[in-house]
Picture 1 (tube, rainbow, N blue to C red):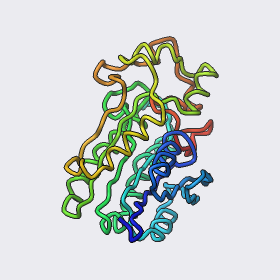
Picture 2 (picture 1 turned 30 degrees about the vertical axis):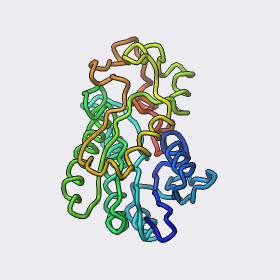
Picture 3 (picture 1 turned 135 degrees about the horizontal axis):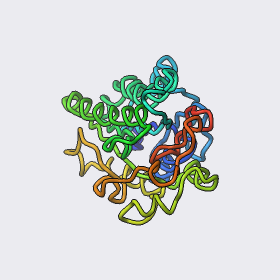
Picture 4 (picture 1 turned 90 degrees about the vertical axis):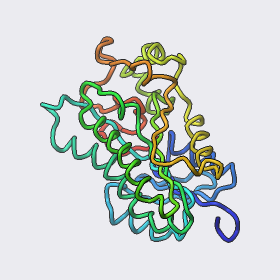
Length: 271
């Protein structure tokens, strides 16, 4: 807690989608929220700052402005697809750089502030961290890396009273996922059929989970991943490429289960 009793959270990818929903939920709950996003963040009640998580100097400069942090939510990320034998090195580096390296950079830079507060890190992974997906070499590897990084940091940082948890969403009804559906890049009916709960998740539901994970009553929970996917992973998921080419071409990049993280050029866009 800060001197005022108000808890502070840093949320990356805070401009839209899951990141924006998390920021709104925390503000509504009385938190002070700082939103990092490469495009900036001007949501009500959120102190926005332009940060590209791929650039450690930018991340470190932003982190240096935070004395104590009760919560860090790493929501910034991108998607991308391509057969491993054909994937351009630059495409691999972009996806790994944002999703995995960017998550590590933010955790590393925020460590002092988290240690002072005995805070929590929540890393947004994906169901793609747990099931192999054709043309998912970069994305699946990046999200599996996020899950393992979460375990490692949770073990290493327990002595500093810092908890580290990953959340693996399934398909979430974010603006870019819906845009992909409207443009026939994703097929909502097939996604719903492949999810035992027969629906997509709402960003607000993911935000509510993250808020709950920050409760003091859950302080024994760390170094683990929470699958929030309506039963998608347990049921074996589905491979959209086997269902009539439901995913966009490799150069579109809007292909991941929580695909709200990419724009047409595959650049960083929050959920």
